[in-house]
Length: 181
Image (cartoon, rainbow, N blue to C red; front, top):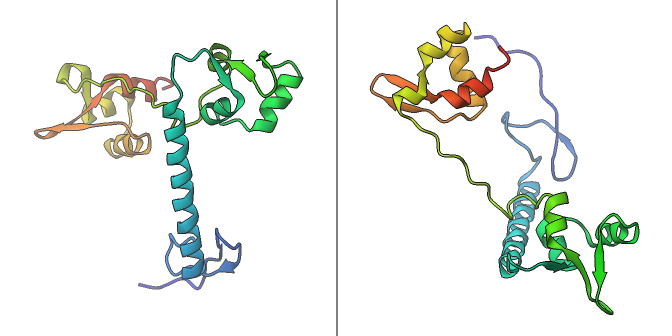
């Protein structure tokens, strides 16, 4: 089989140096860059674990949050919070020196919590045959090829279940995916 006469150049994600990767998935130019990136990822994981532990210590029934607690829960920097307080964008209550408090109810309504601090509950999907389509049914209903259906299911991470010779996919997920067709 003939090979092409081309090389792929890539920029190292750690140091930014241009290099020719030995494989298609290589991200780093050398083992040293790979080790540095790994160490950074491990440190980030440890910091996130500490942050999660601190968030768990904050009672959910607490009506008013300190600026530090708001920083942890909502992922907003201290400087941004204080700037928003000064501009009047966030109502705050000052109970004395270093006792600025923010309403948790207001913060919950206007800011999303930082990813990972609260996990969403996924709705339970039913894989009963009456609540699901088979791959063939999807292909007929939406006039597309079976292989395209499988590709879309993988791309959009739609859960499937195989029972015997049939692969079942929840109707609600497929209807959401192909509602524009």
